[in-house]
Amino acid sequence: MLLLIYCIFMHPSLPRLLKLQQMDQKIFESRQFLVRIPREIEQVQKQLKAEQELVSRYKKELLQIELSIKELEEEIAGIKSKINQYKLQQLSTRKNEEYQALSHQIVSAESKVSALEDKILELLDKKEMLSKTFKEQESKFHRFSDEINGKIENLLIQKKMLEKNLDQLLEERKNYASGFDQQLLQNYQRIAAAKPGSAIVPVTEESCGGCHMKMTKQTYLKVKSSEELVFCEYCGRILFFPQ
Image (cartoon, rainbow, N blue to C red):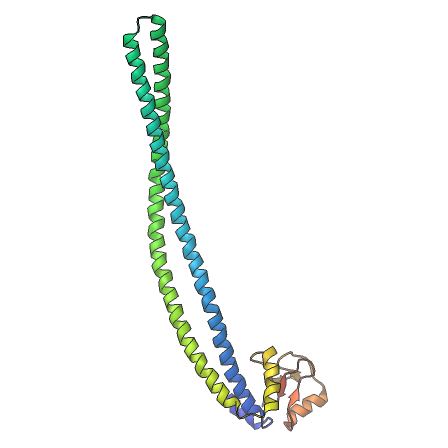
């Protein structure tokens, strides 16, 4: 409706150019959406990867704790084996000094065993807490993974629809532009390339509707007369006078 009102008070070429600009704006917006979709997919994939890396980190820490516990248990077993050897040596010795020395070694070894067992208990407590955190994070990751995969699937469907729609828009634009004077079309396309969606703008309060610079009285009257196409002296946009 707005375009029809404008048509009554403008140069004969402008209605068709405005329609072409509307088509170009739709094409521009479709392309912008298509550019954003791969970025959105990349962004959510990074988020998913971060969650996965956190799960892997917790799992690695758990495995390291289990390895440390196993090493401590092996060390304790080795010390206990020596304790048994010391006790057997005590039974076979007849010298009091040797007996006392072996007793001292047994006490020292048992003290080491106790200290190592305390370390194992600490690690077991840490393992229990970390296991809980790991399970929570793993569950969160699986839920997040389902959500992200669903979002990616929707984005890909949207991308396919936009590509199809863009192909249709481009074909329509090609057919529509074929009826234009080539010089006029080239002038418009040159401006539109630098100023997408605003190559043709209305005059507002004697100023360009694009760059908002105030025009000369002569330019203003030319636009109002609608006898020729008028270009903004500052930004080069095509101007028309709205009513």
